[in-house]
Image 1 (cartoon, rainbow, N blue to C red):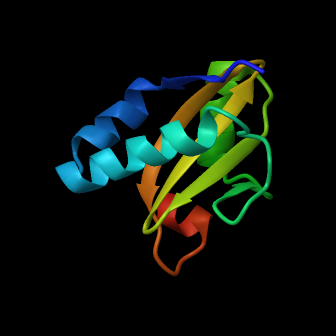
Image 2: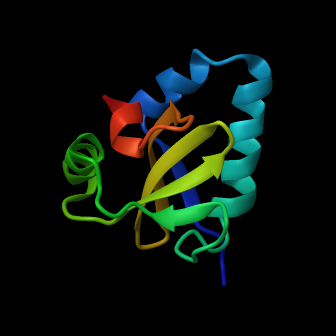
Amino acid sequence: MPPFDVRISPRAQAQLNLLRAFDHVRILEAVEQKLTCEPLVRSRSRKPLEPTPPVLADLARSILGDATVWELRVVPWRVAYAVDGRIVHVLLVFRKDRETTGDALS
């Protein structure tokens, strides 16, 4: 099966550009490794966001219509993404410590 194509939204790219080079590279490597083969398979580092925080639901809807938003964990960072066919859309990159995802985004 061919790999999934990963597309990073302008908003996610802007967030990546603000990070330290170490974190930037680490996140991109995790995206390449974990989202190009089986982005819709639950694992310790991947899960669907249920319930989806309104910020992410609105962002996904603006790009894809109605789609399930998933989260990739790259401690302490999170990568929110949605899949449309064979394309993985990286929606947002954010830091999450002990708070809920919704609180981390507000």
